[in-house]
Image (cartoon, rainbow, N blue to C red):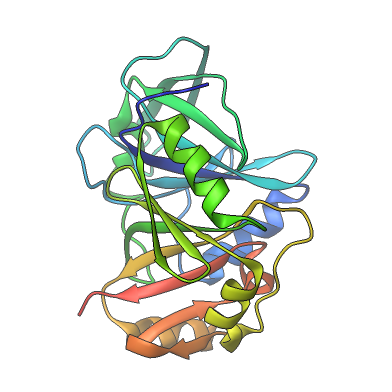
Length: 250
């Protein structure tokens, strides 16, 4: 299927034990939507008013990570979700999910109430997170994977250095790494490429300042590595499955 992707909208984590994954993500300093309703979401301030920026966590099998791209016109399955805010207000969202494709698992989504993922109480995080900047994936053939996704999304792709391709749709970038390049770039956490590829392995998140985040992670016994530019990298075994790279903005 081909679509006109406006941006990477969100990333869905499918886990056998989402309760445990949610608890780990809270220890990393994220605010999640209420536990009573699936999916649990980590919402960020959006780059565009009508394009959400979030992660969602659902229970299911097989486990894995799926990318969702935002589109304006879409026919597909209508879905809805609602949460109750701290003030007792019901926040509802309706959206349409279409047929996706490969080679990386992805789906197109059209939001009818994007504001539901932008509630003030859910976009403020103890770790100072400001938004999802990028998604990291690993492929045995990064160039082929990136070109196929760019063609499917009507996006642009380019090689940024040996072993790493960039797919650009909007504010959130997709970086597709070769196994060797990925492991070299993130050797500080002894990153390992997944057996099944292509696959999403992590995200990059903008953060206000590095020192308060470091203090929070240490207080919660979350292991991390410091890399060039004061970046803070949390390995996947500490988050419930995804590497999270925090990118300081100050």
